[in-house]
Amino acid sequence: MLGISRWWWLAGCFALPVLAAPVPLQALIDATPVGGTLRLAPGTYAGPASISRAITLDGGRQAVIVGDGKSTVLSVAANGVTLRGLRLTGSGDSHDRIDAGILLEGDDHRVEDNQFDDVLFGIHLKRVNRSRVTGNRVTGKKLEPAMRGDAIRLWYSQHNLVEGNRFVRARDLTFINSADNRIVGNHFTDGRYGMHIVFSPRLRIERNRLTDTGTGIVVLYSPDVVLRGNHVAHALTAGGGGIVFKESNDALVEDNEVLHCSVGLRVDAPPASVGSLTVRNNRFAHNIIGLFFYGEEGGHRFSDNRFENNLNTVAISAPGAGAANVWRSNTWDDYQGFDRNGDGVGDTPHEVYLFADRIWMETPMATFFRNSPVLEMLDFLERLAPFSSPHRVLQDPAPRMR
Image 1 (spheres, helix red, strand yellow):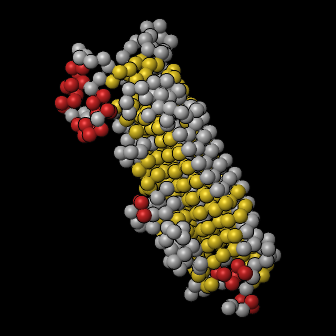
Image 2 (cartoon, rainbow, N blue to C red):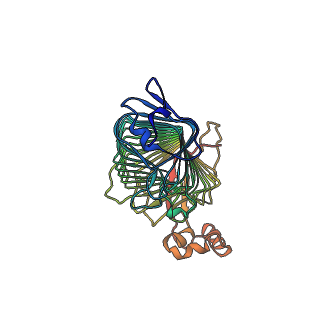
């Protein structure tokens, strides 16, 4: 154990000279009094380590904590701990243990301006309340997406703020049984799910940027969620989409931009569901399918949205799906009408019918041939002289003109 004579004491703070060999961090933490600050000098410190009382650990952006490659690098089991300016690397690779860069337990923490690399899970909040995770940078291990851990994971954690973080090469950003959290201004690229929300009502998810993930934002069994001002792009897995809702009532989807995804917005709920989605002022562009409704009549409200250059604007699982949705004042790039009085509203309603589209929507194996010359010709003939009654998917009585 290092002698106390090698430390410099100043106003409850510790400073260490630069040492060539990693310094055991745990001894320094144990010597820091409650409410004190352990200010690490530039250098490398050996983990894993744990904190069991309220202190501030400040690395000044020049201190590196190296794990043993078998466990979590830094664990916190206390209230009111601040972790700032640290670089954490070298966690274990066990999903069963949830090996992470930082494991937090307790309340009222601050985790800010830290850097993580070569970690399975980045930041794990386990029954943590009223804490702030801001300005961190997390890069996961070089593994296939399904084998990575989550860049951030909240479990039974409430009233936390996750803001301004950058996440790269992780599995998901996961929120499980974690109500009333704010997720604001984060960036995430190269993952499986951008955000995976399960049994977590009343989340506020605003101004996040999610790109190159299998699916963008998935909301499962979580009512009263607000998605506002997010940018989701390049989410192209067949069963996912940019934004996906399943049995999550009374949500607000507002001012989002969803670009180049397999489906812009996918809504899946059984007929017994109560409540509805309000979808307004969003832009859905360059997606394979703009909107997809599965297995429910709907009752959702769509207003002032823009649908641009989607390969298919709207698709349904079967006739009747989405039949009760309400449409008003949306902009449709395939609207075929005029605005003779110049009021910015189309003179006739915008209607979407299924013609040959019904073949691949009702027979999934036919999806392979979608947009093939044969189906395109069949669709043209159906529209020219229908030999069966087309199915109307939606009617917008007051479409906006460009």
